[in-house]
Length: 165
Image (cartoon, rainbow, N blue to C red):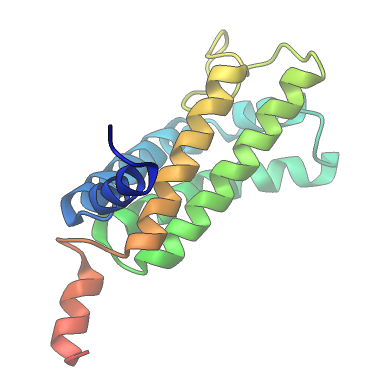
């Protein structure tokens, strides 16, 4: 049987493998961009979903409904392209942490609402523990990217080589 330290070291090596980091960047980036598209197309519906969480003051719901999806696009694009990778990974982790906390809050308060994760359509995916778990999973992937750095096929790497650093 492998020692716990050896197993931990092996998991760290796998998590830091450049192609694992690239896969994490792409999964997070594509997911964020996909999640933003319906919200951008239907900001009023997204505002109603945000309002249903009962967490934001009424005066900031509409601005959040417009800003959140554009933040998702910026973070997603940065991760896909590998530009400002660590900053984008931290921003993604923060976003996923907020999402997880908001959904967990709704579930704990017994609110039966749509999560607003990937669509604003009526009868969409409900806010539940599965959506909390998914947000926490994406948070962990974001932290892995932050810890490991940009990985292969990243503009950050290309720019470092051009500058000679």
